[in-house]
Length: 360
Image (cartoon, rainbow, N blue to C red; front, side, top):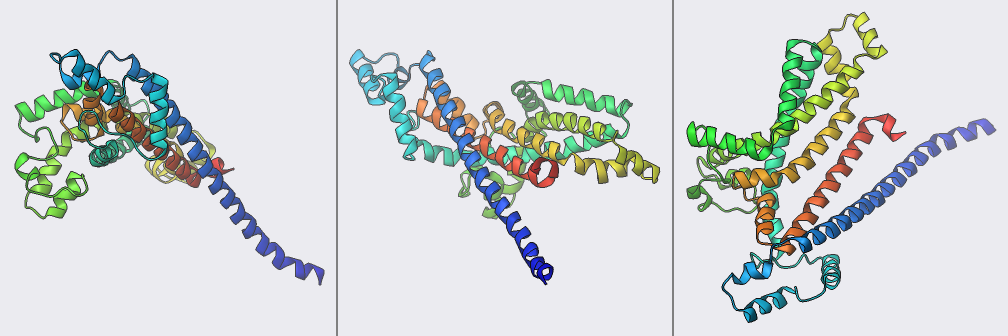
């Protein structure tokens, strides 16, 4: 009688304990994410502010010009708050950020938050397309390389990976622009769209592909795709090289394990073993590499967007640096830092879901 009464208690308590454990993990994950975000952003703010103070660029001089009088120059310094001590300006800036105010851009005269909301979708779109290309091509190269390690194809993949990982993005972008746009006329020029299309459609989202698709204007979406292909390929080269190299190494390590030997003994082919057994088992590594590649794309977009005149946060930041526009530089740094921490947190969650060993 006592044993029959105890059975339903065990059956109910186990799911409850599992649910409570998942709840604690979720809360702990949120606490960890906020703590990581706070520490990262605080470090970025201190470093970027200190770097701005040591910069030889003078925002007041940039604002009034070389031929302004001393009174005009001093008035510009006071209007920008540069007559205040560094510590006072830093504390005031942090206080504004904590209240949701990123300040006003000295160059554009607009709110930095509004500027970032306007340019960030373009970077997000370009980086996402580049990541999709890099992931598909990188995984394909890794699988082909793992099929016959040490063979000719493996050597070609390793050389391609090494070149793709080493080549400077800025130089590669200039080379591809000169070759495929200026000489061969195979690709569209800099920018997101041709001027005729850009001035005749609404841009509610900032995404060239989505806005042109919404416009319904014939040829607009095709024009957006033509403008995107070169910068996306330039960014994808670096990502696919990292994915191919690290995934190949993970696959080869997995192919030495006992379950693979057993699968071979049952007559399974090498391609089937890689696709159905080894690749799922290294999915955690793949997700981590892809997440790191995504954050690299967001940071590396500065050079690509400058070369291709892409109106994203990278070009916005480079313009702000040349103008010594500290509110814009600090705001852009905070935006990229937030994206970096968020992408890594999402990747960590996916890895925990895919790999039971990480959850243990």
